[in-house]
Amino acid sequence: MFSNFKRLSFKHKNNKFWYYFKNNARQFIPTSIFQKRLEQKLNSIQEFDSNYIQKRVDYYNQLDEICEISENAQPLSGLKLGKKMKTYFFDTYEYIRYFNQNLKASFLFGDVIHIPDEPSFVKSRPINGIIKNSVLLNLDKVRHFLFVNDKKTFESKKSILLGRSKAHQPHRIKFLEMYFNHPLCDIGQVNTNMNQHFIANRMTISEHLDYKYILCLEGNDVASNLKWVMSSNSLAVMPKPVYETWFMEGSLIPDFHYVHIKDDYSDLEEKLNYYNTHTAEALKIVENAHKYINQFKNKKQEDLISLLVIKKYLKMTGQENDTN
Image 1 (tube, rainbow, N blue to C red):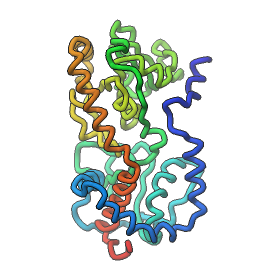
Image 2: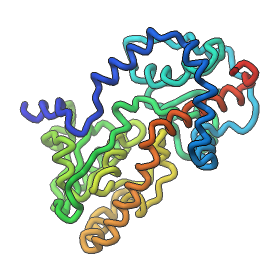
Image 3: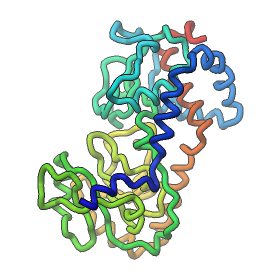
Image 4: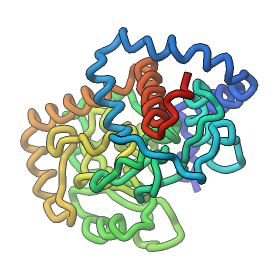
């Protein structure tokens, strides 16, 4: 019973009350006010490295030729706040309000792991394949884009792997079957509807930070804890990712940004033992992870990139003349 109350811990978490208050308040401001500010927002690129900005824009939006948008696309004004997926709406509306609301786009909300038939804004997409129709926006960021200020040094932490997550997917269950009760691991599932023998106590983010290694296995799409783990002084341990979001998981380098294990998990013990005896290399990965995280911390820059991703979408769907 007590472990369930840990879900209510607000330490190291984004302020959801402020998030919902701010985003609900935005609904009362006319979009025309923001459309007048668009040019000024786009001109702020002069304050940043334009080559870096364009590289990020082209990573998220890989459309490379003009294509007509289908009849299924809806006007931007047609995107309405509903009872479900409120965070997806809020995070989309934050930026589409800057554009002509008669323009059209396709939106796919949720844990999207397929490539849509037409150019669509999504939170997640496969890393491999022809993915240009999957245009990434930073969606559900109050849950996924979370960073921590870790005061504990890597050397002071416990030299074992910690893992707590729901385990519905076969690959997560396989990991539990292989390493539950392993002397180098403290892992378990927090859902109670199946595999009762794998259930473990919930742990707060603060409690996670007592461990050198934190498991970051993908779930329905990406590993939702990866961002805060990489911002900590612990090491993310995971196979090479299959899906990606605004965090650009596809650009992460194995054993440079995180501790890479094989897809079948067979080398986990070898990798943990290696970094337990090669502290300097472990600390270098922590440093590299922090540098990677830093690129997402400038709100003004992230806003600009988001607007440019949308602007490119409108251009590549043949609506460029209507964006002014």
